[in-house]
Length: 299
Image (cartoon, rainbow, N blue to C red; front, top):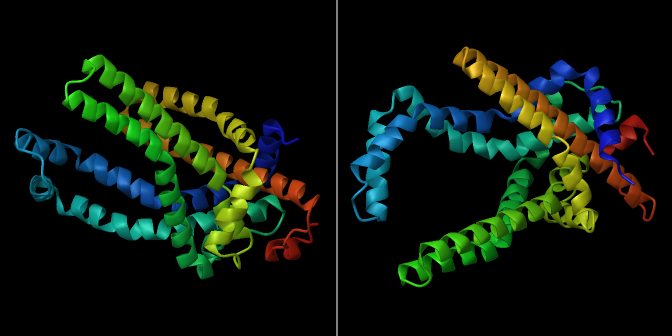
């Protein structure tokens, strides 16, 4: 039986000797999302003001284009550059995620590791993008039933059926159903990127299929591992909110550091979970050996 506390302990032991490298790798792999957050934060007022200009206009794609153009005109050149960089950086995200998993597997298995391992799976660049697209499409499809309930509530409300209370109820139920189904799908696919990092010869479809097979009847087990980090996230949020009242810039720096630590810790624990599931799997059937296992001499 896989125990969350044991996985976290193994993750902590693996991170001790490589903490500076682990944090740097996590930071580099998080650059796409950090740039998006910065772009959204710096352009928030521009977007809100542009929306207010057209708040009474009839919704159409032409109005959307006008809102985007008005927001862009009031942004500084630096903020516009951030938005231009977002699509390019997000093309790098799947590849960086594979590299981060590879680095994490190395430190868990006692192999020598450094920041260059983040870019060691260059052969998986396009496969990683394909895998990310496949997972995204499948998660959206899983969420369609919940979206359908939300849409039904909106249609009935526009036709005057049920009133606001009934619309709110259906919308809430649909949203909860959509989130639950998409989270369940994400848990089924979570090991796919680790599989690709571990055995790069596998195709994107094969990684996805094997992740689903490994997670079959084990979804709640992985969910319990992830939920064990909720306390860390809550404490981090409380600390940042307290510091924000003293100094907002300091709070931002502390928030970044805490997020890096928690993300690194959680990702290492998930990779440790992958290792445990692979051992369970190999007990019943021959497992394909990765090049990293050959290097470290692991059974």
